Structure formats: C-alpha cells, structure tokens
Image 1: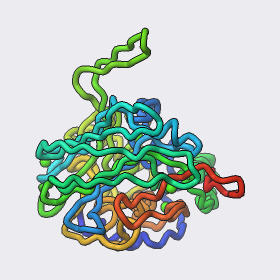
Image 2 (image 1 turned 90 degrees about the horizontal axis):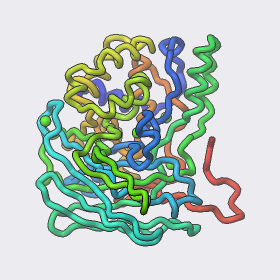
Image 3 (image 1 turned 30 degrees about the vertical axis):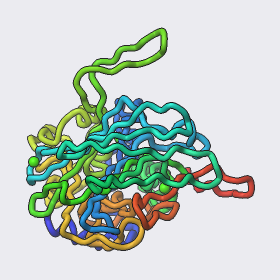
Image 4 (image 1 turned 90 degrees about the vertical axis):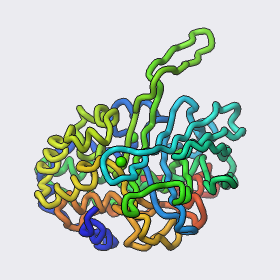
Length: 403
Ligand SMILES: [Ca+2]
Ligand SMILES: [Ca+2]
Ligand SMILES: [Ca+2]
Ligand SMILES: [Ca+2]
C-alpha cells in the first residue's frame, strides 16, 4: 500500500461536501451499502451475507489484532430474540494473506452450534491459523430495555479473546441520499443537496457481529503487513428432509459472499457479475478477472488514471484484501481514532470508509455523504462495538432510525 493512500486518510477527517465534476457523469445503478445485500445470491441468504469486515490493532494491547465481521444486517431491535442467532450451516472463514501476494496463506475459521432456544448461548468453534481449536460462547439476544451483558472470553492457552452476538451495526452511510444524488445526475439535474441529508440508513438497527482479538505471535506478516478478507461458505450439496423440514449440507465448501476492502463489489462490480465476484478468489482478482469491469466503472465515473491505479493497488493487483500494517500503533477511544492507524490501513469501526473510497473515486476531491459517525457510542473495551439497540420504552420518542 502506498504512503499516498495513508496520507489521504488524514485529509478525510473533513467531510465537506464538495461535488466533483467526476460524479456528474456517474452511471451507477442502486448502490446498497458497504457489502450488505450487494449481490443476488447473498441478498437471499442473510446468515451468509457479509455486511462488513474490520481489522485493527487492539487499542488495549497493540500486540494483538482485532478481526471482526458482521452478517445478518438490519435486525430490528424488536426482533433481536428471533433473528439474533448464527447459522450453524455457514462457515465463516477469515483468509489471512501473510506473504504480500494475492494468495491467502492461512485461515481462521468460525462456526457455530445449532441454536437450541432463544435464550441459550450457541457454542462457537474457532480454528486458528496453526490448527488450534478454541471454543467460546455467544451472547444470547434480549428484548429488555437495556442491552444484555456481553460474554467476552479469553482462551488461556492461546490468548485469543472472543465475542459473538447482536450489536449495533457499526457501519454508517446514507443509502437513499447517495442513490437519489446519482439519480438526479442520471436525470440531468444534479442535486448535491441530496448528499446533505445526513441520515444514517443503519442507525437504530442491529447486526450479528463476531470479533476476535488475536495475539500477533499467532500470525505471520510480510514486513509487518497482514491481509485479511472474509468468506462465507456453504457446503455444495443441500438435501431437504420433507418429514422434519431440515436442510442437510454435505460436500465441499463454496463461497456465498466474500469481502475485503469495503464497497469494491458494491460500487465497482457491475450487477451482472456481482455473484461471480463473490464466488471467485483473490487470485482471480490479481489475474485481472474483474479488472476491465472495475476500470470501466471508474472511468465512467470520471476517475483518472492515477486514482484508478491507487484503487487497483488496494483491491486488484494483490487481491481484494484489507491490509493492516501492524507496526503502526493504534490508540484512542472506540477501538482507536488516531488518523495514521485507520482505513485504508486496515479498518476500524469508526473509520468513515465511504468518504475515503469516494475521495479516490472523485480524484482526491473531498466528497462525502454527510454521515460522519455511528449513531451510538462505540465502547472503549473489546469488542469496541456499540451496544445492541433494544426495544424502546414508551417515553422514548426517537428510536434512532433515519430512513
Ligand atoms: Ca454482502
Ligand atoms: Ca500469500
Ligand atoms: Ca449504528
Ligand atoms: Ca461518511
């Protein structure tokens, strides 16, 4: 990753909406979110639909890396109990790229036991890169007025700390504002005020979150840099048992969804190839399988060669991996907030990744969606996620939603 990219991260602490001429030729269809519901297959498989992937040095202990991801987006607080579970038939695979190329070297796999009741924890099984198996309990959801106490456990043998459960969705972005802005461009009457709504489409909703804090001693890096992406996978053969209603899976695992750098599939891959992108590998990225599509989209958006090359260096040339330089200290509240440690160096919950990606798409012009942070406070201890949104008491007039 070039230093110019990291430098740009500082610039983006200012989120003034300056409309780039580049956006006046934007031909995009509906842009959905970081990765929530971004492709037809994932759209209809919520437990396997990745919302976001995060990687940052643990601000409480910079000798550990926090890997986190979200699935099952847009859980309404009143449905916490029904929907607040992990699917036991999905394998969540964090691919680790430890040599600086486009090929994943080792993995962290997370799977869950079947849910036995709405109030009973599920057992998570984590297989670490060295093959060590760790088990931990999820935090069961609740419909109480206050968020349930989190179950955070540290495995004494490996030092891995784990959380899994319902949490406030840490992603923030104005989906309709952005899409109305694009539509106004397509209609020939660009209306920049659409980007000034400042309404966070994710505010007030929960998602299923998994977070692990992993000692650097269990990881390997290339000059201190580690790449990560998440695959959600199912076994190929599905058998429906008509007497019990069960669906039994067998055979080899295949991707349903994949994500490294935020917004790549969502924004840059044409709709017709979004499933194919998710089913492909980072090696295919580097081999140029989607390069023509990505360059075509960016060129149509008015992105110049310099910035096409920057975006390609992040997500194409060495595969769509989020890359974290583990030698840059991360500190501050809410999972860390010092500018040099943030996206596109890894990704923290508080990083305004939408504005950063748009900055490069718009040829390093400051542009943003006027949503500059999460709707609830991130926490200062692992897992750093905001507490789950809970059903409101009658005297509460604002449930945070900003549709
Ligand atoms: Ca997705
Ligand atoms: Ca490698
Ligand atoms: Ca939120
Ligand atoms: Ca923003």
